[in-house]
Image (tube, rainbow, N blue to C red; front, side):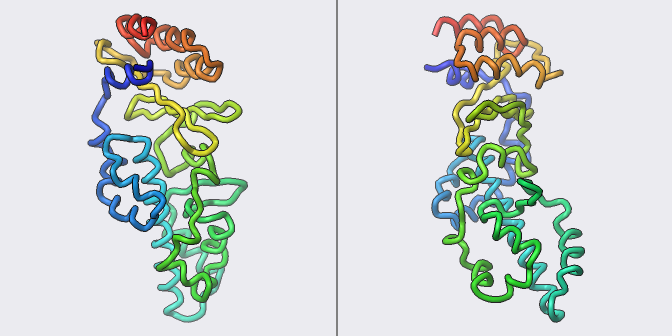
Length: 250
């Protein structure tokens, strides 16, 4: 058993992840993952919250796509689209929708390239004719792998509740307040490691100044310092003395 597996097996959540809005959103919409053949395996992710984060990025992107297309079709039914008027209307409609921003470009549909995202937002009239009109119903062949293309920073967006703490050369560290976990995500947008904090042996965990307390743990991880990581967890009151001893004995 690894230190990560032991920490996860003895975790003490503040509240079950399954009662949170991210899990409920996933359960309500996961049937739509069938539209993404390469990601439909995420349908069975009830026990893996990181895969739920990934699935929800796709599902929220799909919701954005359908909302934008609906607005385009509604406006086109009243005649030719005026780009300026459309932008005003669209901005009102998507003001609360999640997005990822890169190089001053807002990516509302993360499974599409930057170029397609710009067409959806800045050149909406193109969606009314081929080849772009085909994207409304059949778009899988135009999909990119958003995790490969946009990397770990895709998780540092309004698509998730993850909080980016820091980055090293090829890995970024994120914290999630509901799961009390650190996630180390690589350049391909995949999970390298998860550290679950606050084991069941702690009577009164303290949740204040979390990001500051996490930095020594993250630095030890970046430096591949196993003992330093275990000690940093204890020194910053993120695990109990009992768990500290168990981890050192592994």
